Length: 228
Image (cartoon, rainbow, N blue to C red; front, side, top):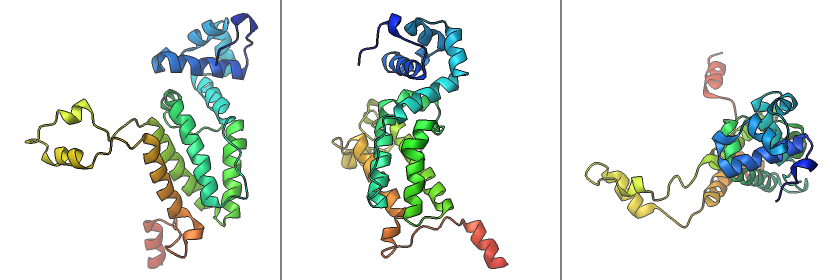
């Protein structure tokens, strides 16, 4: 999408976020700075700094701008379906803007748009499905970390020059594994979907008849209760 002419731009959250994301997409992680965004917007770098408060503040403006575009999920959907839709959309957004995710070093997106479009509906859906507060926190921490990790991973298991150069004499197991089991037609999103569905299934209260719904009481807590 073409940016407005500099003379039309105002120093707003949206203008800064759009410009910063454009710089990241065009020129990479090391190109982003207050000075660069200011130059793109026709403003001083100090004006951008004052508006954002810090470099991390600018990154969070970008994250919350993207969060506003996350879909609204039908609250009538089963918990597992709604959760897959939400986290798939989050993964796709993060994967498309992995440079931002990398600069934030995996820190959660916690702006008002993220809270409204994602976090609040997640909590409401969890409570409606019968989760405890602790289960909601632990479940979504696992799903969020998985989404972030997948967004930052690029063809990790595909054939590469490094893999193809491995000596069978030195790495016989690795060479055999990659010769037999690599599926080059499997996309990053395919891997994400398989993994996120496995995680969701392990938490799904509707699957309790087939397997225990996961308890988040850790082993040390269980041991202490047994000894009491």
